[in-house]
Length: 243
Image (cartoon, rainbow, N blue to C red; front, side, top):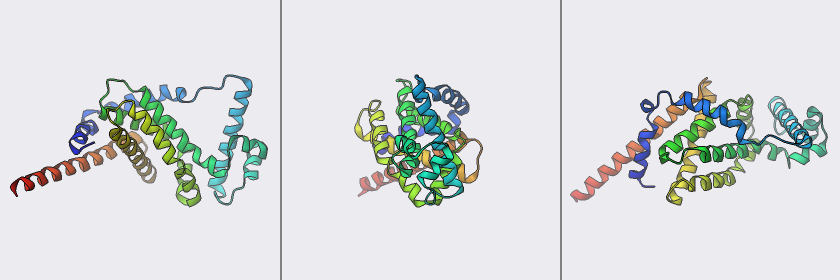
């Protein structure tokens, strides 16, 4: 994507153009969230889902209270009221468990991309995906704990980062279905990770209640960067012509 092409995204990031946008996106996200993960159908599947969630909840509480490095798989199993064998039926390791939010984040991104209207421009698509996933992530009551664990323990953060490349590839593939060229798809995937990551970090660190407002600020900063780049390129062209 060239700078001129990026400029076409700029107007889509403007706060003044979408004053009621966050409210409509919040409704859409709440309606779509249950569709992202198919509900278990059989009794066995429901039992497996219950066990997995119990292990997950127990692990996050222990990571937060005791420490990621200090917590053992056996302690997680005991807290969850299950067995060590059951833990390994659902997760390969503590690191695999800690990385699951990144995998689920990727699934939410792909779902959000696929559910957007085919008539959306690139900028509209990008903006809606960011709002949908940001609002869904912020609604998770454990988001704050996860961010604190990842921020405090390098090994926990590394576990999450280990999945980013594969997840970003999935997101790129989803964007490629909506873009005319692979470069744009790759750029959008990278941008959506950067914008969402920045939005969540600022939202968490500043204790802001409405993550949609934080996302608006992130878009505004991105628009300013793109505008500055456009001005710099225009100035460079003028200089080159005068030589």
